[in-house]
Length: 243
Image (spheres, rainbow, N blue to C red):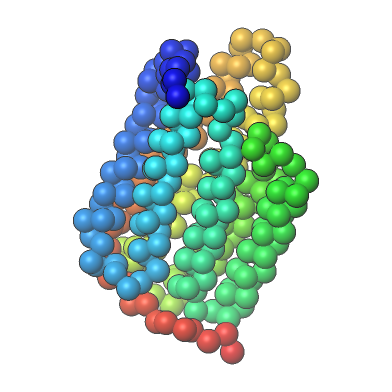
């Protein structure tokens, strides 16, 4: 099979320092997780580390498909990623939350998001459309769940030892990216699609907004990497009962 590389699409990637930096730091945070794997072995954190590895590989494969034009759009890679991403995130916090109400609320939010995602699968073109509603609600629900964890931690943990918790670093990193990513998703995939042909100035503005989200991810991955180094092994209690 002949593979033709689009010089225009390749230049789009190579000439974007925020995207290249994000990919490098994504790999770096994954490697840091592997280096400190033993510290987090037999805890749910290993699933988070594995997700970082999957996410990097997914980015590389989707970029390859994009550059070589093997398919018209590479949305399918990210649409699958949404399911894996939010399943890992919601499951991770569910495992660490101790408050019964917070755990049940996490299950409820996860179920609602699952219905929204399934609705997209059955009512849209999974290969060429982006699940805007699932992406927005997924990030919003994640912010809510993170706040559950932070409130619980602040109320039940010695604040002088809060930096020992890897989930604190994960939470801060995810909050940084999610708070910025929410408006970016809405603006780029809803607003941009409507004015792409309108003017170069609008396109430039939305490109700047999109790049801002890449830099937010860069900060997130740095926080993850430092957290793997700084945090101590979590005192994880298995099979926390709901009642």
